[in-house]
Length: 74
Image 1 (tube, one colour):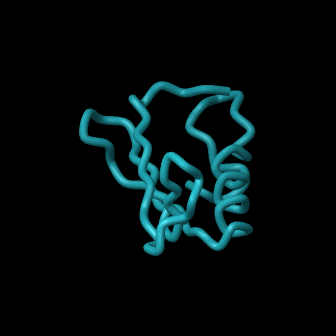
Image 2: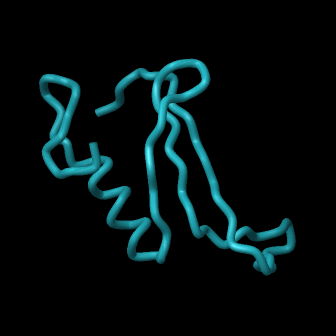
């Protein structure tokens, strides 16, 4: 799914998630995809520095996740 050119829509370029993965890696993070709780996909970013409301980095490196409802964007 993160390979350039992989798309599930007819006129998709397949570059979106490949770019996301490269940006994550450039920041020292990793990204993975699993099934979302309500269908669709859940994207998890690992190794992300967690920042508090003041903008100070926390000591622990955490994980951040976001879910898609399964609808496609171009």
